[in-house]
Amino acid sequence: MDIDSRGRLWILDVPKSNEVIPKILVYNTLTYTELLSCDLKNVLKDNLNTIIIDPVVNAFTGSRAYIGYSNENEILVYSLKEHRYWRLKFENENSPLNIFASYFAVSKREPILYLSGKSDERLFSVNLNILRKLNGPPAIIEPAFINVTYLGNKLGPSSGLISDFKGNIYYYLIRDYAVVRWNAKKSLQAENHKILMQSAEKLPFVTQFFAGPQYSIWAVTNNNTFINVTTTNEFNLFEKIIKIGTGF
Image 1 (cartoon, rainbow, N blue to C red):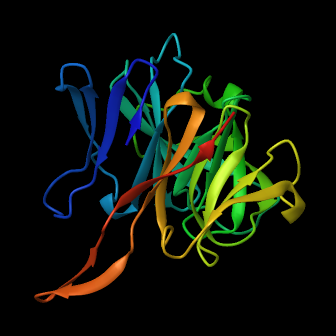
Image 2 (image 1 turned 90 degrees about the vertical axis):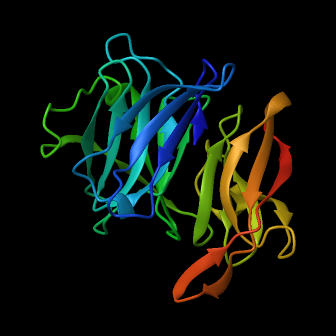
C-alpha cells in the first residue's frame, strides 16, 4: 500500500483464491470511503507484490502507480485519470540476468525510480523524466519499453526499499538483520553505507518501509515463523512497526 500527495490510500489487493481477480483500490483517508477499484485482468496474480505512487501528477494521465510484477523484466503502470494499466518492459545491456522487480523507491531529490528484486543484491534505476512521458499501448498484451540502469550490488540480499528527503536509500540486509542507509550520490561500496539498526530480535525480517511525520523512517517487521495449519502451509506473521531514524 501507499499514500499519495492528496492523502489517498492505494492498496494492491492480491487475493489467495485463484477465482478472485486482483485489483487496485483507492480510498479517501478522511471519509474512509472507496474512491475507485480497478480489476487487474490478464495478469498472473502470484507475480504481483508491491505498489508505489509517483509523487508527480501527470497533466494528461493523472496520478500514476507503479506495480511490482515479478515477471521477467517488467512492471505494471496504472493511470488513475485514464483508469487503465499497461506493461512496462525493461531493456538493459549491462546486466545479462533478468530483473524481477519486488521493491521500489522514488527519490525525493531526483527524478529516479529505484528498483530491486526479492532477495536480490542488484539495484537498478529508471529515469522518471522519461517514464512520465511514456503512455503505454491500449492492449495489455503489448508492452512499452524503457531503459533501466544497473547501479551495482548492494551489501547482500535484501528486502524493502525507501528514499528519505536527502535522497538516501534504505534497505534491510536479510542475513545481517540490519537496516542500512546508502548515500545515493556515491557508489554502492560498503564505505558509502551506514548501519542504522541491527538486531535479530527487533528486526527478524523487514517487509516494508514507510515515511512518517517529521521526516522519520519506519520499518514493518515480522518474525516470519513457519507453521502448519491443518493441511495448508502458511506463515504466522507477528508484525511490529519500529522507528529507524530521521531522514533529514
